[in-house]
Length: 369
Image (tube, rainbow, N blue to C red):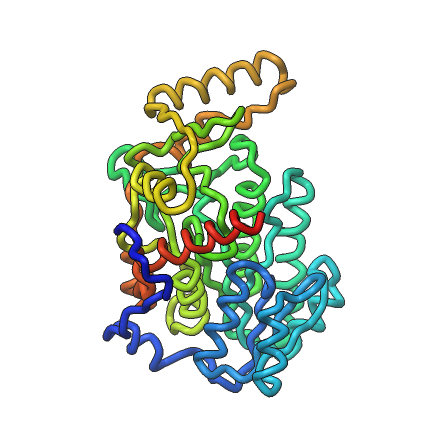
């Protein structure tokens, strides 16, 4: 698992399941594909993946200035990639973007929003507007909603495995995270439109997506406070998925037949533990002081924080609570069996190569800071 000195990202050859899934896509390369959030961290890689597969009508919806890589693709692919500027809060923009579209890969989301209303508006309202527009075109073959592992309550006591059978938060507001709340509600509205309006959909739930362009350390490992890093993950496996592997899964979810109304988790195979990752990060990027908090201690601190928040009537919001602890720091294992079996997905970029690429990017960011 240790990164080598090699900086190139290597890929595994296509397996039999990869080839099987590529033989019978539900749309042809001439059908129009819409990618929302195309300028985002994952969206750019999804567009590149579609280009490599030979799709000739890729419409990229962006809000604001498009990413440089999209501009380059639009300029060099002879019309294959087109950039549409718009806001999913505008129903007119949604109708314009979805006209003639056979496949929607919906990655736009309210990531980074702290306010629950803002997160709801920019994840749920936008998704509803897009579903309304797509449902009226008569062309839609599938709507792929990119969700998140954050919707799960955590592993069950019996199996300690997080897979697609795990329960989703039924009261997501209690976790105190606007992103989790918005993603749960976004999934719900997609499922509702599937039931009531026969919208063909698939939900993809990546773990923590890492790689060049997303350098911060995941909170599943720990948190920085007062100049010290509190290591909370311990020997927990980390539900990591490298950016290229995640993009591959999202595209396969859009193309593979006979998977409508299903959800698929995406994590890599050779998952590092929190302790292994932190050790590698310090060795390959930078050293910093850290203190490991055993699970019983971190659970107790979350309980005390939650109790004080209740006592003070939320004068100090329960940012760290037992619901967060169960979702992020409770010991669990993560399964990608379903996406392999049903979509033929395989981890093409190895964990060693992925970590090496990620650490190289982290060092570059630090040098340029």
